[in-house]
Structures are given as structure tokens and as C-alpha cells.
Length: 228
Image (cartoon, rainbow, N blue to C red; front, side, top):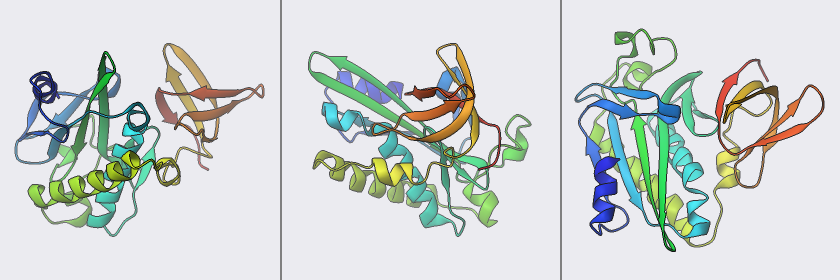
């Protein structure tokens, strides 16, 4: 992501893809690290110079593209844990981090994607029970370059739709497994527990608390507390 931002400052065009063979200082959401062994996974950052309308959909677009990629490679359907973690059988297989900067009227966004391709989660106790990979689910190694081609195809298709004025909100929201569950949302120091009732027009999570209030979250960390 740092390389993609450097490229943006040097005038690199939209669509620049920066990748890493492995990482030792990967950034996840909320300041977490992202583990990735050399040669195992897909670790890429993509540069966008979106319009305001397109910018508001980048996170949804990226999460949906990742889910569609996973679905093309697995016989098991994926789901999205709000806002954009892709999971299979309740375990995380892909994460998305969007960082944006605005200078004048121009917005520059970098979408970082970590997709577990050949990762063996059992090597790390902290993710052994919560993460999975294409290889773990199929029992066979996957080619990272071929996987990247599929991912970029999906991103390109969805971004073309967004630039043309369409919305990916409905397609993305239909995959969000968080809806209908009891959740705890941590956002800017506020911790709220309630039932996730739906997704708003802009991708915000709508949570009904025990006292009947409907709370709206544009960002935050969600813990799933119960079944649908």
C-alpha cells in the first residue's frame, strides 16, 4: 500500500497494481497485522483515482470482487462479514483495507487485498481456528498468478459498472452474513450490542438495540454473537 501511494504521488495511472511475495509488516483493519508467508498468498494493492460517487462504493466493490473470486475457485459459497471480510464456512479467507486521501478535488484511494491462497493457518496459533485458505479448503495448491487474474477481472468488471453509474450495493449486501445476527459493534470507542437488521443505502450497518433504538454504523469492528 505504501508503494501504491508512492506511485500515486509520482503520477501513476489508475489501475496500478503493487504486490508482495510475502510480508512482515502487513496492515489490517483497526491497526491489526496481516500474516503472510513468502510465496503463499495474494498480497496486492490497487490504485484508484475515483470520482466521489465511485469512491463511496470502493469498499463494497472490493469485498464483492473478492467474494466472487473465491466463488470461482471453490465449490463452497463464500459470505461477507460486514464490512468486507470474506469468509468460507465461518473462517476468514480474504480481507480488504481501503485507504484514501483527498487533495483538492482529486481523491486517491488504495485498496489493499490479502487473499489466503496457499496459507496453512495452523502455523499460527492466533489464526488457526479463525482463518482458512483456498489450499486448505480444496486440498490442492493454487496458482497465485491465475488467482490474481481472476481477482482483477472481477474488480475491473465491477468498477466499470460503478463508473457507468450503477451500484454494487445490492449484490454486496446480499452476501453480508452479519444481517439477522446478534452483534457487538465497536466504533470510535462506542460498544453497542443488538440485532443487525439490515444494510443502509451506502453500506452502513443498521443495528437495533435492546431499548429499541436503530443505530447506524459506517465503520467499526463487528463480533457475531448469535445465529440468524
